[in-house]
Image (cartoon, rainbow, N blue to C red; front, side, top):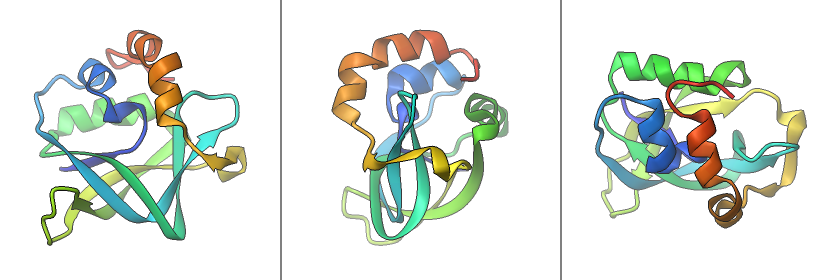
Amino acid sequence: MNVFTYGSLMYPEVWDRVVRGQYRGAAARLQGWVRRAIADASYPGAIRVIGGQIDGRLWFDVDADDLARLDAFESTEYQRVGVRVQLCSGQDDPIEAQLYEFLSPNRLLACDWDTAGFERQHLADFAQVHGAGASR
């Protein structure tokens, strides 16, 4: 199963601490969704919004054991749903994937999640704290 990630799991530093397998990844874009900052959290949530777009990372052929690890990592704040993404490399055909949809839209802020701020302020600590199958 392919998995489209748009937050902390876009970063190999976090992804590799949650999953056990080795997976090929590629830059990808999802239409019809937005990624928003969450009040009092360093990670984002995604919800469907007409006209929205999220740039993220697609991980290919994730096995069932690692999907279970990802489900545990995302906890009950998210549910896995099917989406179709486009590779940023220019491949024309959409690719089927799973995405973790945020389930508490009332906690989302009106602003997009600040990827550069996450990288500067939270990535190193986040990878240490939230890796190895730990949930948030």
